[in-house]
Image (cartoon, rainbow, N blue to C red):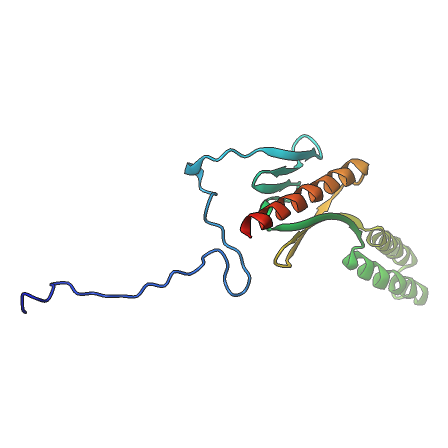
Length: 181
């Protein structure tokens, strides 16, 4: 080995890519979510469903705490939030199929009359609850995905809260897009 050549001679090319978004449109955020940064998070809007469950929009997140789930979504990735009443397809199908079949079975004597009528009443209630439906909170993201959560409350207060929530998100999104120009 000659004295002119360095002992370690390694040359590599490094390619720096944008880590925040890949080719499929998925978004990864690594910047300010670490605990050691200690950025203050302001609560912009909060709606309490009861003493333990709430919907909260803060500086960085939309937090949804319901009896069945507790989720946090990044605010800048949210496109819109809505509350819709949707019919429940499974109770509709099960009640719509079992109800008439139980009446026919009771009529031809396959099951006893009491059992057939009991099944018919149960299937009718199931069909009714499927037809009435339930309210769902729908969170739409900028990449087109949606998350839906069952919510047991519907009144003018929550409608007003969701309207304010959408206003805040649209204003924040327009401010964020102007900063990127």
